[in-house]
Amino acid sequence: MRITVYLTGGVACYKAVELVRGLEKVGHEIRIVMTKNAEKFVGPSTLASLTKYPVLDDLWTKENQASVPHVHLARWTELALIVPATADFVAKIANGIADDAATTTLLATKAPKLIVPAMNDQMWNNPATQRNLSTIEGDGVKVMEPAVGMLAEGYAAKGRMPEPEEILTWTNEQIKQTKRLNGKKIIVTAGGTLEAIDPVRFIGNRSSGKMGIAVAEAAANSGAQVTLIYANITVPLPKKPLIKPVHVESTEDMLQVVEKYFTACDALIMVAAVADWRVKKAADHKIKKQADQNTLKLSLVKTPDILKTVAKNKKSGQLVMGFAAETDELLQNAEKKLREKNADYIVANNVNQNVFGNDQNQVTILSRKTAPKKLKRMSKSAVADHLIDIIAKNLLNK
Ligand code: C5P
Image (cartoon, rainbow, N blue to C red; front, side):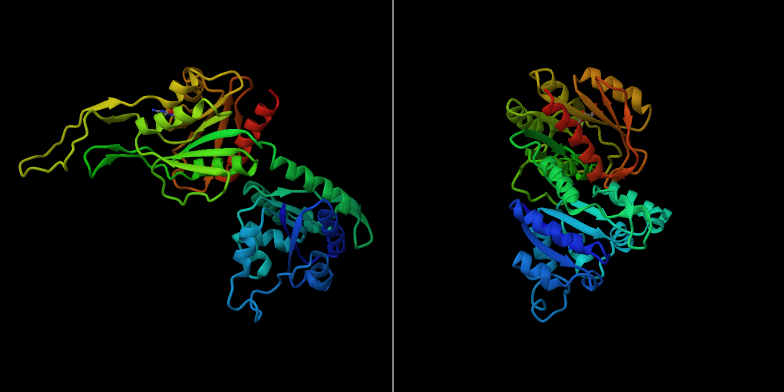
C-alpha cells in the first residue's frame, strides 16, 4: 500500500522512525512529510535514507518552485498516517488550516487518515484538544488513543505515544478494514432523478448527490466494487478505479439500470432522491405560454418504486438499504418504509435540518433486527463510514 507518514513536532518522532522501518518491512511503499518542528527531533535525512525518497517539508524550495508536490503526493497516497500528532496539528486539521507542507498536503488528500496523537496529559485533557479530536473523528479520521505511561516530563499519565509495534499492529488492522469488502459488489444510487415536462423543463428535487457519493467512496475505501448509478448531481464524481459511474436521468431509467446490476450485487444502497411523480406524457416540443393563460395543468402519474420493486426479489444474503428523508414523524415513517419496501435497513434523516447540499448530516439507522440507532451530527463521509461498517459486518457474518 502507498502510505504517506506525517511527522509533527514531538519527542515521540524517534518512535516514528522505527515505525517507518516496520511498515517498509511488511512491503508498504512509504513517503514522508515533516513539519519544521518535527525536524527539531529527528533529521529529515534519516527518513529520506530509510525511504530512499526526499522528505516533503517545504513547498517553497527551488526544486518545488515549478511543481505542486503536495497535490502530487496527496493523490499518490492510499493511506495517510500522522505519527506523532501534536495538539497543534490536531487543532489545525480540525479547522482545515493549511499553512505549511504537512497541513497543505493532508488537506489535499482524499485517502483514509489515521492519527496517533502524543502530548502532555494536560494538553490531551484540555477541552479544546478533546473538541478538536471529536471534530476530526466526525470527519472520518481514525484516532489511536495515547497510552498511559511515563511522559517526557518525568511522570506517568495518559499522553504517551504507544510503542512502534503497537502502532504497526493497529495500522495493519486499519489497513485490513480497507480491504474487508474485497470482491463484494455494491450498488449505490445518488442524486435526484429528473422527470421531463418538455425538452426544456423537468420536475426535479434538491438532492446534491453528496451523501450518495460519500457512501460510494466509503464502500470503495473498504475494497468493494461499486456501481454508482447517479442522476442529477451538483458535485464532482469520485475518481476511483473501484467506482464505476453510470448516469441516468429519470426514475424509469434508474429502475432499469438498478435491475440490470442488482442480480449480481451483494448490497444495494438507495441514497438517490427519486421522483415519486412524472408527467403523464412529456411534450415533445417546448410548451409555449399563451398571452391570456394564467395556469398550466400537468397531469402526473406515479413512478415505479425502485427499492420496493427490486427488494421484493432479493435473494438470501443480499442486503438492501434505503433512505427516508422526512419532515415529520421521522421514525414512524421510516419504520413503515422498512416493512413496506422489504429493506434490511432504512437510514432516516430529518430534512428540515438543512441537509440538501450540506456537508453534514444527522441520521437514525433502523434495522429489522435491532433498535433504531441515532448517530450524532457528523460529516456525510463519517455517516457513510458508519453505514458501510454495518453493511460489511452483515455481509461478512453471513
Ligand atoms: O418512499 P420514499 O421516497 O420516502 O422512500 C425513500 C427510499 O426509497 C429511498 O431509499 C429512495 O431512494 C427509494 N425510492 C425508490 N423509488 C421511488 C421512491 C423512492 O427507490 N420511486
